[in-house]
Length: 338
Image (cartoon, rainbow, N blue to C red):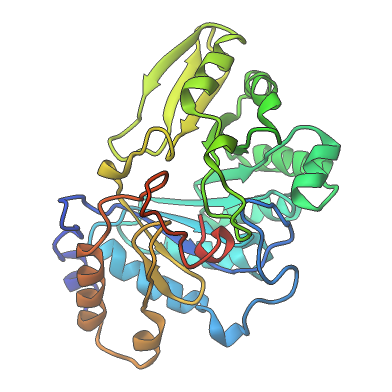
């Protein structure tokens, strides 16, 4: 199909009339951290051979198809995306796709010092850094790396490179780091970073999740109000995952992502593409769908587009966390891509 034909495709929708605007693309299953709620099965070694994961050209090819069907935003994830050699080259390739309005990345920040400027120059628009503790010893306990200072240096390098505002994602787990909610609020007020608290979800490889470890959105809000007058701003757009808040004095911006106690499935606009080219319609999908094999078999783009449309049409109405018929997904978080 020609570029003009691709750009004239009908919008990508599911059976619940949700329009797909966002694509999460995992570029690697490897990670240099061992966070218990994600925990890479393969540790620090290469999860698959290079031939087993999508090349940058293949990612760009598939992304172009999605953009032709109305996808506007792409977020690069992992594993840890900065472990993928030359990741800035992929960003540059994606930035050349006509119609792709936003390219973002989620990273643990460990390698940001050397990568921030390259990513910005290549065309990366937005940056989110996963950071679950502001305390050195606890950070090391959660991640398996005593590198909090390195991450903080990475945040400063990202600021210097022009990323602003930077989002900080903190997964809050009762008994692990829930006593740092106020600390993170002060961190936002002091740095200008947007701190987003995420409820603990059952995506951990060891299946240690339980409902009593979830700190609900309502409790987080109450705790945040102890820091200052909190103003609810709602969601920036209908499919936004985070409820947003700010402090009345203008210092500090907060988001809360509450998939457990306040699910937002009804407005979901996201699909996920794993590092080995499997399309997933939900974080909690029990199945995924191979796009890489037909791509490598050189099928016509029209065939791939029809596959994508058929898969998307069957997107789940929502997850079933907390319900009797809930089943863990067939992959841990690091093998899905956030």
